Image (tube, rainbow, N blue to C red):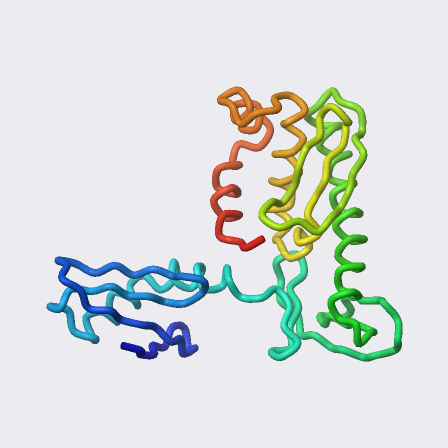
Length: 219
């Protein structure tokens, strides 16, 4: 059964499947609200539960929204959504100016990736230097920015190199900072051992909070 519900002033579709069960399960699956419910629950009762849990549900939905959308006219940069203006000047160039994000090319994806690679390299290089000065006795590693699927960064400790996903451009700076610190701690401990998380916690006491926020982001 397909229905709609208004959450924070916006209408969202959801599906209900009645089953032989005693309770109700509400999930967000690939950005869609999916409800499995016992026959005893009415639609108003189901929607009351959705409303009660709307903040968690909305976070799940937003995690699957595209970071940049020409159709809806926005681009997400450093965790903030900006109006997207496309002005084809035949240049692979983008800029954030006066609260708007401009792309000066019809090759939107190519132009944005070039911008993201440059920005992520600039940001992560600065943050790596800052953290090395404050928390590590380690030489400056080589920083590489690539397009990855399924991971935000990698540490190649034998090569003294750290690689970051250009999709970091979409994240709030506190989450980028977590990724940077996480990868730098691999120069101390290669594996995700108790020692690794001990070293991470010493340098970033709220890492678990940031880690949990990052889990809600698609990569």
